Image (cartoon, rainbow, N blue to C red; front, top):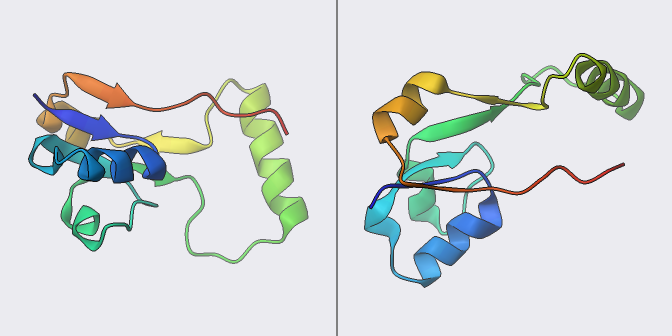
Length: 95
């Protein structure tokens, strides 16, 4: 089975269940357990390392949502290479 986790807490659960050898992709936020950092990054933030204020972030997110875009970028090539049987994710909460 090939698993990709789009959620840090789901990544931790995969490890707690002893299924890490089936984990073929994680997000840029997955840093625990430390071995998760060795897995391919399937999801990255739309924000680069440029420091932004909360107002700027809110405006960018609001505009992207109006355009029907998400706030994360899925790395299609990495996802295709992982060929997951199972994606672990959640809906974005309303803010």
